[in-house]
Length: 297
Image (cartoon, rainbow, N blue to C red; front, side, top):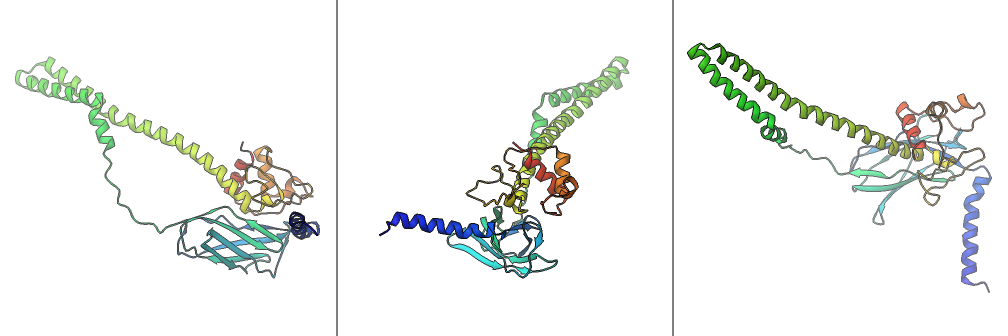
């Protein structure tokens, strides 16, 4: 009699063999999303499109790919995609019933490819913004503003004496005080604005750089790059199944000249005429995001 442990191990090995036989037999495919879904809202339909390419090259027709979406054990659904457009291209219309972070996969041919987490938001509600009073408070309490007021007061008093007594000295003091008051008023309002603009620009550059790497990571998964190239910065082996065919570089600690990467991503055969890498028809923004991710630390 076999023990339960031996039976369990044998069953696990059998399942592993079942799932790996198609790979060794050449039965694997790359699933490539047309574009990453954005602005997905509860209850609103949106369409996803994708290609199914055997070995990343040959379009596969007459399939019935299944999209499986899960929020939790009580919120999940399946949708069958239909062939539409050029050979190997499929589309499906999805409607999410709840907001949250949805996990979703596409099953086609022998592959079940997990896609980047999809953020589904609630319908937007118009919000009336409150008046901004911070800048007024800053100006009213600044030293420059106080000195400017004092200069204007002195200038008005000097102006009175200049008119009453026709004093050149009083007229000169009036002109000087008005110039000082005007200069301090302009400086007090323009300098904080310039500083705020500078700080805002700096933070936007940092945020843009981070978001581009994150966008590149999602594209690395959604475009099917992870099917052939393992990259620990994208996901672990337990999260995604990477085929790693012969010649596919492990990109975990890889970096290269951005110009070379751009050429390879735009047209793989321009760098290597025998390249097995598929032509993904990436946009310029997608290429730059993928380069930022691949070269990130």
